[in-house]
Length: 311
Ligand code: PEP
Ligand code: MG
Image (cartoon, rainbow, N blue to C red; front, side):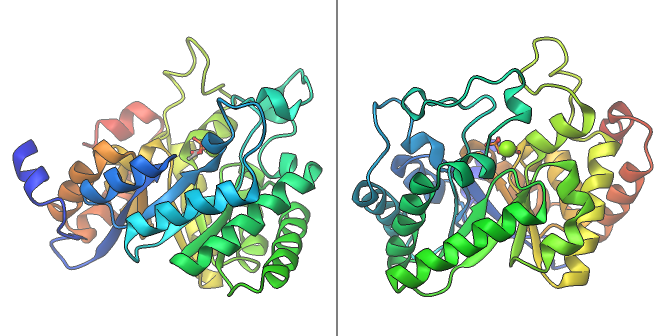
């Protein structure tokens, strides 16, 4: 089976009834951009840019970032990259940024909140992204957006930077990984071009279970119906606004999770590089009609175990 998956990894993920799902990669460096393509990835659905900032003693300069994003775009050969702006805080700490010591860092100044309070770092990164966008298709994504005012501030800054650089418009999107963003999805959807569901954080915040917790993390299953219902609500709001939805958390790389997410209406799944061939194979082996029915049953389950039992 693994041999077949590997052989067919460059074939698109088209279900038996003809529905296409884009399978793209989560990456964090240039070597992974190349590896993603070799594994059959159809682009990058999540570039975790915080990895450009770790294991060093100062932030990467604008030119350094341009070089890295450009090298990744070259490796993609015309396929798109979703560049997520710096997502630090919570479990992601960077010593030289002198981040505040917080009692509850997962509920603190993380993600887009950090960027909005460290605007120079944010503007430098956006300048680099817009400069690199001349090299290939770039989409920009903000992490941890919880409310419209944060998004409005981030979009205003991005537009100012774009105009300064003189770059073309880029598709703009946000991660949906905070329950309030799900509730505000209609308003958020009006402001952006796409959503990407971050199932790792959405699960942690929906179930109030720390994703790193030594005993609870095992129970914090992204296939819990509570999480699936939040995703369903998000997809419906996005559809009404006419924007597309993908996912980039761990659920997308799980064969059952991939089928359920596709069945809920997601058109792009961004997964870890080793999962690309198996997710594509799983989607090719099933019909969208069955996946929709499966998703419908999963939404009606009482717990994660019942959803897993549908496999
Ligand atoms: C997520 O939260 O699901 C996600 C993809 O982002 P990260 O794991 O980097 O927080
Ligand atoms: Mg996240």
